[in-house]
Image (cartoon, rainbow, N blue to C red):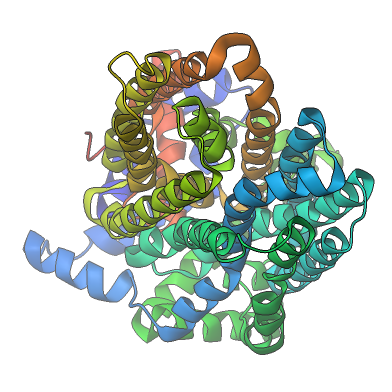
Length: 554
């Protein structure tokens, strides 16, 4: 809660903070915007008599943390279309790749490129999204991304060669990447802190709903000739995309934090209006004051830097890519956010859903119809579990959910590797399918939804757009690498060996998550920034980076 963060900051000795600043190469954590906001809260919150703890939590939960308003839910559902489109692409390509390859005479390398190139180019779209968002805001970026996706799918549907399919996938990838960079951050910035975990998790739920729709569409169009089959599957998602663009995007409000960046009085009124409509009247005032304090403190910090160094370029350091990689607090956030985004895809989850037919074929399932049915079952399991994970992340916390999920993923991957390596020698088709479903269920309970929550809320406001963009780009690059190398990898070390490798990666994620991930449940974005700043100061005083002390350690 607010008091715990503010009080922990107020107890930091001056000599500790000075020592930290010297070790950090000049980054003044005691004068950082997040620290100033936390210190000001000490005055506001400790000058009053201490209420009963239960009464305080009730007031904090219902007032300062905000209420869930309909506009917030509608906006989250609208921007989550990008997650649904990506999920649909993953699911539909699992079934469309076979008829597409037969129709256009693809070899195995072309098939891998057709599947994985979207993820690589979406990484470029994500990096661009971090820059474009700062200039144009979320609403314009979302509209442009929707158009890019629709154009790309139309190009693929009319393709007559591998080159045309590749071009269409590139255009789609730019739209998906731009959406991925913008939407989790946008959801986090318009959500009440009490509901942020649930609402950001909608992004992962949308991926799974899209995935399930893709699997079901494969079954529905299975009887069509190859050409009509895969082309119809490419055209299908443009229909809901057009409806969203025409009826929902015009109602999408801009992020209040983006509106307040230039200090315009007119935009401040708009920002307050958005906060009232998304977080409630009681929470809007305190949220607006916190955002303004952070932005004002950042401006003063940059002015001091310019007057002291005489270098205007230095004033942009904290807002640019250099600040993200070299300033201690953003760098700490980058380790957590980008690391979590990387491991979400490095554990082989995307390979499992893209290549369900190939994995099941290795387990002895030879019928294409049976493979598609099994793929649909995997999609159902993922979708059910992601709903459970969504509503658990704000109950049990990010850290607990992620550690439990990663542990279960590691165990299920080890079981799946064993099954695929012992086909006909104790491992039946049913056991292998059960292991695959267990992997997807474990992933969806925590690794899937919690990743988007962490990456959207962990970065300080001055580098948030770039931090989220970098994390999403790394996520998409990792996904593309896994998707484009999986078939080749299985040829060299077998399907069982590939999943044994993914088991080791998942075990590494468990260790790193336990060491570095703090609990952020229930905190405002400004409180999380203050918490990380205090952790950096404390670690600097101890002489190195040690595990962040969590208030709710698992």
